[in-house]
Amino acid sequence: MTAPADLLPPGLAADVERASGARIVAVRPRGGGGASREGAELSLAWPDGRACEAYMNYDVHRAGAGDDAAFLREAAVVRGLSQTGSASGLRLAPFIAAIPEQRALVAGRVEGEARFDHIKDADQKASVGADYMAQLARLHAADPALVPELGGPVPIRDQVERRLKSIRTASERGGTRDPLLRLAADWIADNIPREPDHQVIVHGDAGPGNFLYQGDRVTALLDWELVHIGDPMADMAMICLRTLFQPFIPLPAAFAAYEEAGGGKVDLDRVRFWRLLLQAGFARGGRYDDPSAPPPPNLGMNMIFSLIHRRVLAEALAEANGIALAPVVLPDVPPAPHDHSFTVALNDLRDVIVPRLSDQQADTKAKGLARLVKWWRALARYGPAVEAAERAELDAALGQIHATLAAAREAFADAVFAGAMPRVDAVRLAHARVARDAALMADAMGGLSGARFLPLT
Image 1 (cartoon, rainbow, N blue to C red):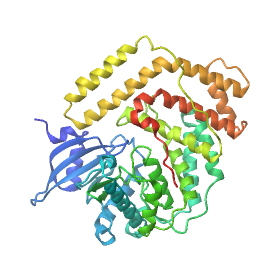
Image 2: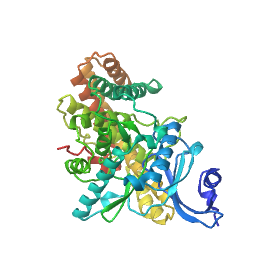
Image 3: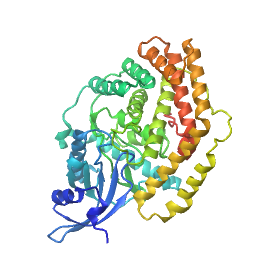
Image 4: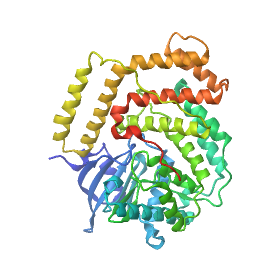
């Protein structure tokens, strides 16, 4: 029989027991929180006879959002707001323990469903969505002094400049320049909004998938790894990003519910600014081919999330600059010589491997692997023709024939980073590349292939 500690990364079980004072009776590995963390359900028992069911998110490889300081802020918010939530009406899972060294946060298990798309009744969708927005309004009304670890307000311009610095750094990471991120950073720098009327506790990752519900009521707000003091419109913008991957109520209805609950007027211009800024932060791309980078929890899904963010960023950047985009489609080419072998592998994963997996975490990773196989199949079939089309497009725009696609991309980056190409042309070219990448991964994306921002009005 497998010991509970053996189902967790080395040393994590002992750290949880030391921090909580409880003994781990049972462990049930889960898929984790979001795209960046792994998770487990725990049965805990204390020496005085108390027992409870708990849930733990952990990121022992530090592959997720934020840094160690961000984890400490997250733990402080869960501890502080879960203890005062009953007075303010906020609903959080009760804090049990935090292990900063492994970025592990343990909280009491709260009953509820996280998948908003599981709601089929229209009235229930409307009620849950409105209740969530009311919870967000209560969060924004909470006194930041309840969580002193968050620090005091910082001017919004300074917050944006700090994020801009990170985006610009990412645009030149590892000696590889990213024209799309540079173009986004330039637009952001030119459009920083005025200071908001007041700053609040910003959840930082607000939206569907980051709360639990039961019936027509939200039971807990989840995933506080991006929490900070800032502009409340940043949470409205983050809802826009999260609806790329999960359904929610229409945004005009969500914003109206927020205002009716006392959250203040939703400023759509500020929402658009934060939406593009946050999108740029999530569109940096992963170091998936870098052997020195920590392995992502689910390579297939992480790559898909990253690519969707990049495509939507390119579309939002074009909209912000008033640029009309032409559709990008894959060329008509026959299947590659080894196409059938990909089909065999996919059938084995779908029909043999996944049905026999009782471990939910392994099941999640196997499905992620199937997405990778679909992508590899598309690369084998369409990759050469797609690369030829991109090279011809760059050659025409730059007025020079390049020996390789890598050389053409380098010349394009030179032009963007030097400000030597009109922004309209540069945005169109950056979009064309990411649109082709998305087309190659469309089969792997499945239903996510059509992810777009929902209308704000």
